Length: 179
Image 1: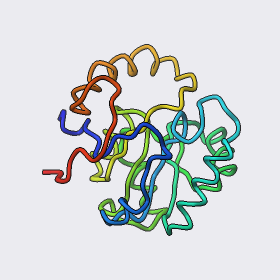
Image 2: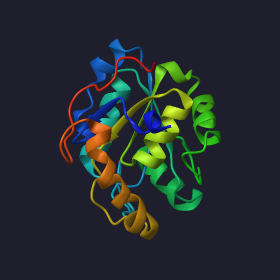
Image 3: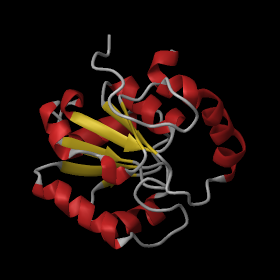
Image 4: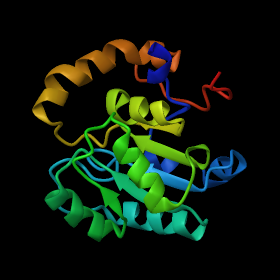
């Protein structure tokens, strides 16, 4: 069970994702968390550098999608701004939303990565589906109250174990094998 909490890749920033590295691993599609991954939670717009970065990923040939626990209304508005299809009210880490995203993308789990800022939703959900999981630092927007009071505290405790390094340390590929 604890193995499911280990991301395949930890990065300090979303912008540190290397498209060429992903292509070498056979990844052709990316599923993104929304709040505090692509946009700060509570924001109604995306930063210009995020929009440009998403355009760059498309130029590299990646298919892109959002899976968010956010509501269809707010999440859908942000998805339109980001020009991405999405699955909302996802109840991550449950699998149904990831399955729906794979169908939207037209890809298999083995060729898809999930990118998010939370171990217990994005990483756990992605690992349960056999996706390549990428944990990035939160953009720092205000977390949902239960996330702030419970989830982030537990994440702070397990992050050194999950990363195999010191607190809040992110670097490189952790596992080559899912075995």
